[in-house]
Image (cartoon, rainbow, N blue to C red; front, side, top):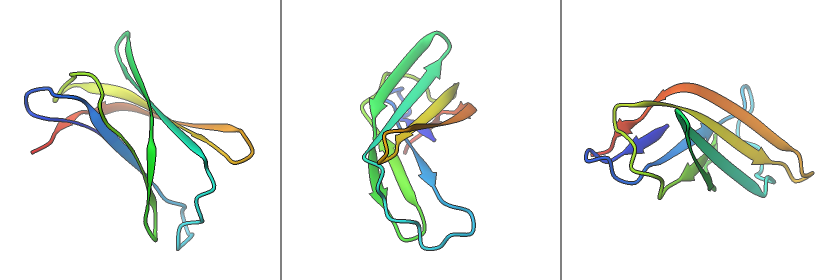
Length: 100
């Protein structure tokens, strides 16, 4: 979910990945993750970092453009597997919320 400070500061965000019916989360063997945020014709892309947990893994980005809060964007998460395949997840109409 993208987040922005109340004054529209640098965009950041993340996505939480879990595997339905699998607990604990499988070991992370994915070497790369990317996020693309589409705001109309404008696109911000960034490499992401993983934060491991027992039941899930978070994919986190920061340092983005001065968008929001209160707008909706489309977000694409790309994860490159250890075999080199790029897997994409699209989330449409994601509301950018403000951080406190």
